[in-house]
Image: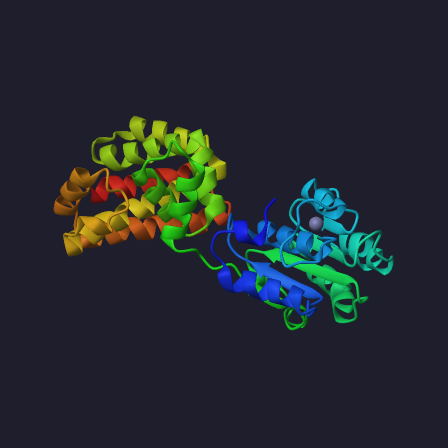
Length: 331
Ligand SMILES: [Zn+2]
């Protein structure tokens, strides 16, 4: 766990929270929004730890009893609300862990802080159940909702919360983080991970640490390089490999989109500095020569359609097979 000064980027949000602490103007309800891997939990837990720190500064001291408890995720007055069903946070979760619990005074600290991760999963009934708590909280009560998509909240909830949006970080911030934390990554790998992570350090870290990602990239490149010569048996073999990592299918599709955007970018600008896959320049050049603008657009649109179809739970193998055929036809 970290201090505010250890968090890369998000300067305005850090200043906002730290000045609220120093002026004693902390709100009772926050929404911290941002994509997967953007650091919502990091910001929330740093804020909570600082609020509860016995030293009372704008950074946690890291040494007092409260800080030590917070760091070990064992703080009696920092409550991470859990939920029974994986897909939704229901009324019972909220009544049991928040609405009735917040009536009990803090155990040992100035505040009682409730953090609800994946709060986009709150049902409408659960949101209604917590409304009164957010409207008229006890003086010591603070509720922090973490969500990738704050649009799902009722207007009545939104209007009572301070919304802090963790926007994508600049590439150079993510690259700096990776360079300072991963000795074995080359400049190119850092830049690639940063672009791919879309300005989210958490996502870039997953890439830096995952061996599966390297495999995934190899498989994507295999389809990209060889689609035009693949027969149906090759295509089926490729579909099987994709199916083995269904969990990261979005990464697979994002990589493909990034590739064809690169080809399109090079085709229209002839500028290699703008490319993300700049270890594959000769292949990008040759595809840019042989593929038409329409063909490239068609592939990029097919990838988008695959994403939509997969959300609708259509047959996975079939959708991927059709995608590879679309790439083959346009290659
Ligand atoms: Zn402390």
